[in-house]
Length: 375
Image 1 (cartoon, rainbow, N blue to C red):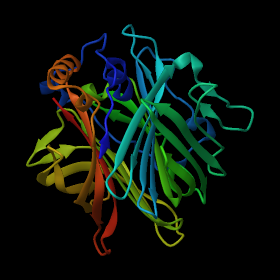
Image 2 (cartoon, rainbow, N blue to C red):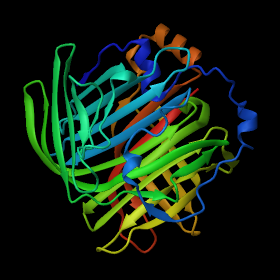
Image 3 (cartoon, helix red, strand yellow):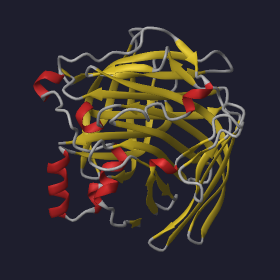
Image 4 (cartoon, rainbow, N blue to C red):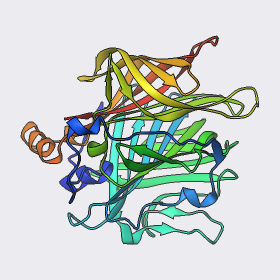
């Protein structure tokens, strides 16, 4: 069953930076001609200071730390820490959203929001603490790649959450050149802080508590315009075998990026490590959605070909759809329609399992995490 609670309009804006901007966006007809490009350099280690918020001085910003946890007992946890500035619409905020999927299909989702002025970033004391508020157990800490801990403990609407996870065997973070991409003429930062790590700890919702062991992934995005303005969709794929063998994908499709013949311009990359060798990075330049099908009422690619910067093509095939999340989906039909019209669209997350097909390799069965903008 899904534990659904009513979200405030404030939270609708918070999670995805859906606020109405003070400056106009380009018409969709012009976006196709706006510049979108990957960096030109090579893979680089992530400087320690990049774990912190990168965009807090801007008048409008949206910043997200996206964690994914996959445990051997079948539990899956998605956790997003966020920092958002709405301009004149409201004061800047931080927040967190958690989704817990149990192996029997039970799903729990919760969100929290706090004023940005309460954010704690201990950059100089060696703790590496990023905490939403000083009296709340909502934080990550530890200096990567040596150590990292994630805690989410709160209660809302009578539902108690207690998640505490410690990472080990953390693969060093990777950024492409300086981590700055161009999406429809706008700068956007994409960094993979944790391509692979072992995760241990506990996950509890109310009285359902489990000790867990598995793997973790985390990427970090910062941008200066809204997701609805800039993008049509985003795709993530995670395959973890062990610390010496893993593959992760993160790419974004710009709004109006259609190239015809089911192809779309894309920014992003694939990171792979095999048998203890060096990490390989390849850019993703185009996506071809070969076939589409419906998952939870949403049309998304069932088979998708990714054209890489080295000329190769890889394929992702959805095999199991497990979770949908949309903040607007928590509203009744009238409120949802009004909010969607006001915001200019709706962002919908779909998650599940997928296979990655790479030439001359066995299929890799992993996890997909897609979002689409429904306008």
